[in-house]
Amino acid sequence: MNKPSVWIIDDEQGICTSLSLILKRKYEVRSFQSSAPALELMESEPCDLVLLDLKLGAENGLDVLKAIKEKYRDTVVVMMTAYSSVETSVEAMKAGAHTYLTKPLDMNELDVVVAKGIEIRHLNEKVNKLSDELGAIRHFDQIIGESQAMQKVYNLIDKFKNIDSSVLITGESGTGKELVAKAIHNGGTRKDGRFMVVNCAAIPENLLEIEFFGYRKGAFTGAVTDRKGKFELADGGTLFLDEVGDMPINLQGKLLRVLQDKEFTPIGASESKKVDVRIIAATNQDLNLLIAEKKFRSDLYYRINVMSVKLPPLRERREDIPLLCNNFLKQYAEDVHGCQCRCSDEVYELFNKYSFPGNVRQLANILEYATVLCRDFLIDLDSLPDEIKEGHSSSVISSDDLAEFLSSNSLREIERKAIEITLKKNGGRRDKTAEALGISKRGLLNKITEFGLN
Image 1 (cartoon, rainbow, N blue to C red):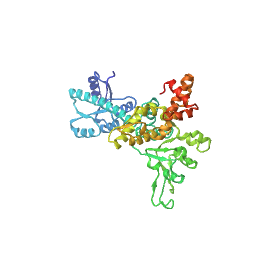
Image 2: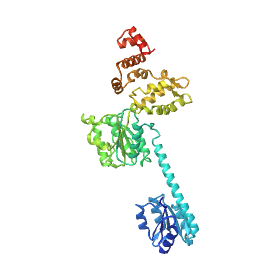
Image 3: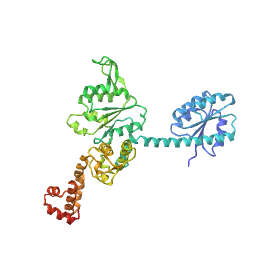
Image 4: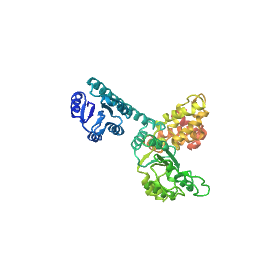
């Protein structure tokens, strides 16, 4: 294990030498007679603790202290001072020094102060590490899922959160694209700035331009005051362009110029404004197809698609369904019943086969509905919307699963499964089942008996 590092900055060679001899038994020691070489070395080599002389020749030790703490806030600095400058030493502590030692130095006191300073340095490292881990948990707290597919998404969020490159989030409706955008913003260096949202599909073209750039008083009839656009409001933060594929083609060119020049002109203004805004865009459409159809600009596509995140549909991460259900039921059930509800095994079985075309948002809506209708705090099949139960039969076997099933089972097993599925679809009614399968009722009864489907 490496020894902690202690650096001595004092203009007297004798003090540097004597302190180095005393401290090198426990620490990695370096000494400097001016601040410049020490500050230069700090850029490439970390330092745990600095013993810094308050009167450093022509330099002011307070200025050196501030320079160290500005760039290396976790480095512990202990000031060394003569009796006549104790008041200045207190000022140094206000500027970030850990404590001060008076000259001539007491070696026992020096040993204790340095040891405590190193301990504080290590504690600060642990606190910072825990804070980073807590921050990572916090900025994922609205995204539920532990599947491998979601772990890939979390990994990308971590990689993208502290850079300023544009990000394009793709995925079907209801997969949580805005939550991912917020996670990137809230977990990164722009978290103290605003997170502004523009839904490009919900606003008419003329109003969308106002939404982006704002206007100045008198720009048009009714513009009685200045209005800031989302670009100006998001300065220093993030602008989230939801459903960017629906943006009118004329406005795409104006947006592209803002992204290239990092400035815009409010409607009715004569001067442009510089902005520092990170762009995160989202769409459920195939932008390459829109480009081929001349509905989306390729140059804008390449500008917003510097980094990309593709969200999996819920049917591709079914192992997350129980977690999602628990999360939504905790929200809805306590509001309705004042306590937690749970789903029956039959409901989970249905969910595990249902296609969820509306993804996580649809699951949330289903559970909100079921929470109101359930009895005895149990969500069963009767609690679910009819369209889910009716759509279940078409989702019992996906096309991929069906191909696998047909290729790996005998005709007898395929026949048995077809009858079982059709019976379930028709609520056990044999007349409807026989009609759907194109066989007689007696023939169906014989097959039910043969396959033990009673």
